Image 1 (tube, rainbow, N blue to C red):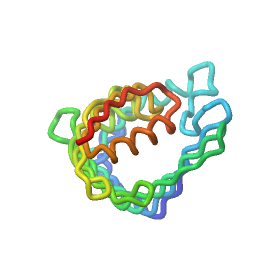
Image 2: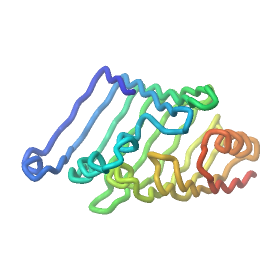
Image 3: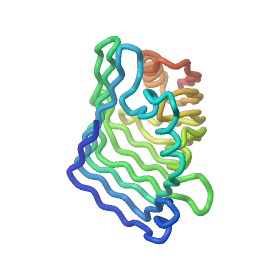
Image 4: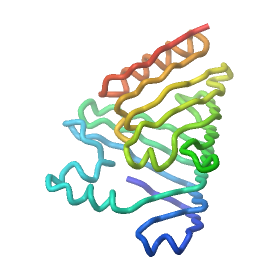
Length: 198
């Protein structure tokens, strides 16, 4: 599911005694990730789905994970659907995420490609804690898609399962239409994607 060429981490040792994981910084380079669903739409990232007793879920919930900053470089993300046998690959040159003070907001800085087109996005999102705990994840980003300015504002209820997507996308009409069609085809869950084209 995940291969990593290089991993760097700065860990606070004292919280480990209380089963808390606190990282000052984590850096990943040369990352290869495969997200795959079976014929029933079950994702390979959902480790608790097959455990009817719920013991696995409890094991994850008992550990608090807090990360001050993350940098990911040279990431290759593959999305493969077992039902339709369709596949999509996204390459990411660099992603930086860092906490903003004591709140849940964190800075977000992304450089990637989507269908061969350069994409840059900056702004704020929810915290890594919210992401890992399937909590509502706010998104407020602006940047460029294929040299055209775009803005994304809204939230995702459960980003790991791509459920409860409620986003507003502002940008040129051709970019909004292209992303809108791709989003509707990509997600099995109902989404609320408001497109506003100039």
